[in-house]
Amino acid sequence: MRPIDHTHNPELTSWIDSANAPDSDFPIQNLPFCRFQTAAGSISIGVGIGSLVLDLAAACNLFAPDLRDAISSRSLKSVMQLPVAQRIALRQRISELLSADCGELQDDTELRERAVPGQDQVQLLIPAQSRDYTDFYASVFHATNVGSMFRPNNPLLPNYKHVPIGYHGRASSLVVSGTPVRRPVGQLSPAEEGGAPSRGPCKLLDYEMEVGFYVGPGNELGTTIPIAAAEDHIFGMALVNDWSARDIQKWEYQPLGPFLAKSFATTVAPWIVTMEALAPFRCAAFQRPEGDPQPLPYLTLESNQSQGGVDLQLQVAISTAAMREQGLPPHPLSSGSFRDMYWTISQMLTHHSSNGCNMQPGDLLASGTVSNRDRGSRGCLLEMTWDGDLDNPVPGTQRTAIQLPGGEERKFLADGDRVIMTGFCDNDQYRRIGFGTCQGTILPATE
Image 1 (cartoon, helix red, strand yellow):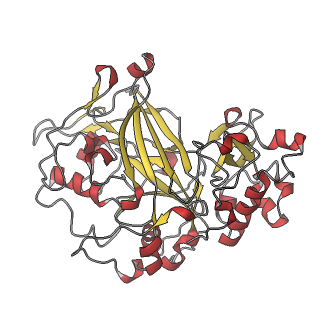
Image 2 (tube, helix red, strand yellow; image 1 turned 90 degrees about the vertical axis):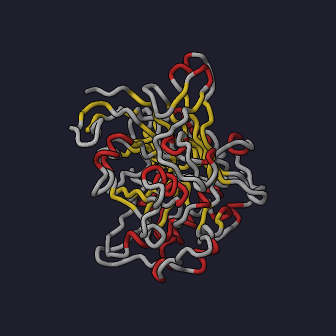
Image 3 (cartoon, helix red, strand yellow; image 1 turned 180 degrees about the vertical axis):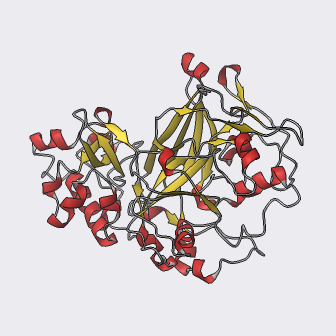
């Protein structure tokens, strides 16, 4: 786990006024990383601070020589693969330069104007050009809800509580927040049992509220990442929306799991909140109910049990085309917590590498849908519109539409719908930090 140090001091302020606003996602205690393109076309890596972004390449001469090559790169992978000690030193130096009582950057007018543009003056890019993307299934509440729809008498398969379940996603279709998402076309299940499938636009389009984490240094092929070292190989976390075509998924997922129902787009936020920034918000791992099996030894570590969770609050809202035309604000759909995931991020990473799979800098691993016990904390429409509950499972054919402002209702997403995801960490001792926004708008199919 990362140490808590002076960069987390809730009294620390910045010479950038917008960072000091109580509702800012990016106070000086956060300092999330991003990639961006300037109006002139150059690409840099940066750090969010209030409503501005620090261009690390433009300010590289203010950093120690051993950090300059990494921060001058066009790719965040150069920073992700740094050893933890250097990542901590980099954070501390950024915090120092942006602190209210430091004049090195603040007083250099020419450099300040070049190195600290407004976020509205740059184009935020996908933060890491991930070569691999893996999606897990780490919420026991989500897994139980979905299982109850189709297997009410046996919602969880026998392996779920023993092994982190995941599948290899499609890295090429990762897109940054704000990118429109085209409704997919695919094979749909037969209308009657024994009938022939049809092909057409997805009718049951859904979102999945997830949290992703990016790999740091990684491991060589044939080696593993022990759970005691897992945190050293996790760079930071970001919001993820794993769009899902439920009707395509229903027809194709047996026997090998998700395929075209998931590969058409996955939206990621442009901001990566580092594990260093999250140090004050670590919490105990999910307390398994009495009678549940304990993880096998390779997934067991006392510090992971006591501090392996992350106290991250997540919210989902929807803005339909009609709502925007009427000037109505986005409508809240759900609010959940990442702290109740059955498997921790360290367990997911360790298990992924446990067969000798090589994890590489910038690889994205996502949690799967974040759902909690209450209906209002379910992380997708598949669950939110389902009339069953964990204590009284019923088949999933019964659905209740969500009522929206202006008289609209939704069971699944319509063209023009915009899904907006946000997240933040907050407690009584430290400054609130945010994860920015992860959003996408549905475009019609183009069959």
